[in-house]
Image (cartoon, rainbow, N blue to C red):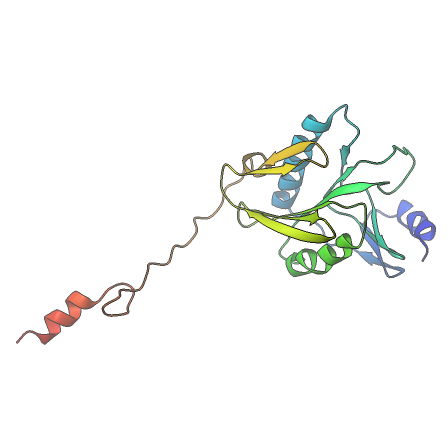
Length: 205
C-alpha cells in the first residue's frame, strides 16, 4: 500500500494498524498500566507546551520512518506546521514508546533504529512499565547518545521542544514491586548468606 491507500484503509476499522514495508499490520492492544503512563506523559507535556510551537499528540498520530512504513508512537511532539486534516506529524521532534511485555524487545530495538532514520526526530524516549525508569536517545552532532533515568527525582531535559519530564509525573499513581537486592558474597567463605560461623561450629570438637 501507499501511505494514502493505508490512511483510507484505516478509516473504516476500529483496530489499530501500522504500515510496515507497504503492508498493513495490526497493532497489539495496551493494558491500563501502559495507558496510564502514556496519559501521564501526554498531560505533563501538554501543560508545558500549551500555546507554544511544539505540541504533544496522542497515539493516533502517524510517524513516517521510511518509504512504506508508518509507526504510531504512544506520544508524539510535533514541532512542524499545523495541518488539521493530516494523519501524521509534519515534524515529529520527540517520539515516546511505552514498553509492553509483548513488544518490549521490538520497540526498544528495531523501532528505535527506524525512528533514528527520520531526520526530524531529535529525541526517542523509551518508558518502562515494570520499573520507574526511562531511556532517552538524543541526537548529538551527527550521531546519537543515550541516557538512562531511574532516580525518583530524575528530570529529563528536552531543550529542543522547551520541556522537562519528571519521572514522578510519568509514573504518578502507579505502584511497583520492590526490587530484589542481592547481598554481596562473603570475602571469606564466598557464600551468600555468609556461612563462616556455621563452618567454624562444625570444626569444633
